[in-house]
Image (cartoon, rainbow, N blue to C red; front, top):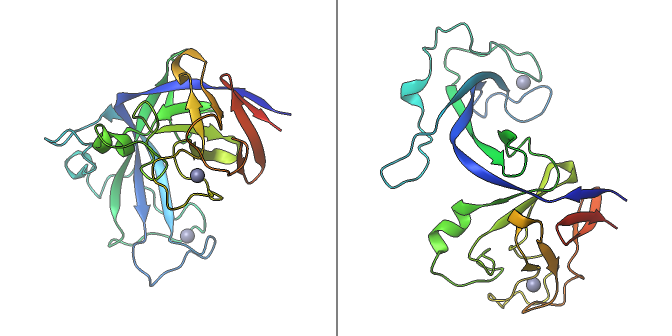
Length: 218
Ligand SMILES: [Zn+2]
Ligand SMILES: [Zn+2]
């Protein structure tokens, strides 16, 4: 039985960046993945740019090196097919988060199992709005995400696939108590909920409970 301590992660104003090439047409299918061809090399770290409304500005056009820069990947990471001149040159970015307890910094894709963060991009627009699984907003008006084994992200405040009250917007399929910041986060069925499950979470390769700040396999 695996156990993982829940740790709290906060966003920074920095992002990790990659130089990315990919194919964006339907004309080629990657011989290896069957999807599009793709390649990324690490480029470094930079301040996140925001729009005037305070949202992250995904447009990094002004900040990327010229197409002639030798650091751009030359061929697909999966199949080795060389990119053409018309394939996009993209400066790709992911926000850096910091672990409140240890000061470790990384992107959420790399964060260890048990990492917890607020998916503020969901709850931000609903600060004054209702609470419930249909809105993906929990009792503290946040949308908490927990990293599970297999790199699955669990949005605790979302609707369970086996929810028994699909027409009810205001209940929570998983009921949260405590706070991830102080190790007391606890998820069960005590509250306005439905009959789905017993408060556990199941994804391919993992089934467990989040009790008293610990993610426990069962
Ligand atoms: Zn490919
Ligand atoms: Zn439900």
